[in-house]
Length: 211
Ligand code: DX5
Figure 1 (cartoon, rainbow, N blue to C red):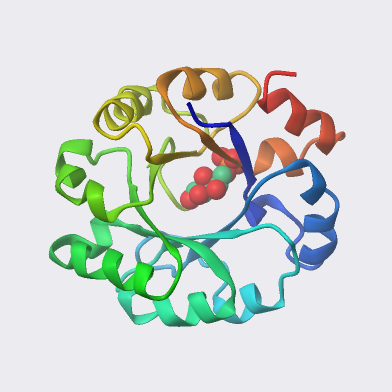
Figure 2 (figure 1 turned 90 degrees about the horizontal axis):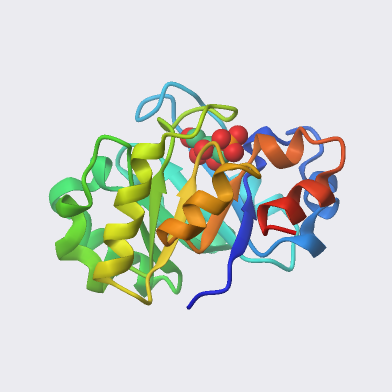
């Protein structure tokens, strides 16, 4: 059984002081999640590899590429310090296997993300090429949205298919939805607004692990 890992998403942090924001919580979490958005695959724009390169943490960075044509940017993010690169199946389509292989060639963990409307059946063929799967529990693009419970059976299905897969749940994760996601089989919880908007961030993080 996997240990539960917490991955704060900096999407809801102060973009003008990201390293201080990371420093305020990094000893209490396991992974730093960086949401990369291009204003085309999702209706929002955030940051690219040059910003990742400036981020400082002893923790691994998960780069969630909510972008079209992610294959063009894999090397940039690997060189900028990504440990896990998550690409969206809805953006990779027929090139999915090739792209996942390239991510591993670059020395990063290969992670495939699926939007709420995408069934796990569509990505089952890629499971042996994946170190992780991001199951979106909100429509990608913005933090602070409500958790979509229809993501839970998708998590369970993936866990049944591959017991050693890192299953990342992303969107609307708080002290109420975290236990549901864990019970369904998720082992990495991405949480943005619940952590960074909390008056006591450390207590918020502890509540995600059920303490
Ligand atoms: C959506 C983003 C968010 C973020 C988490 O594209 O991926 O899911 O990481 O945001 P919260 O925890 O505020 O829903």
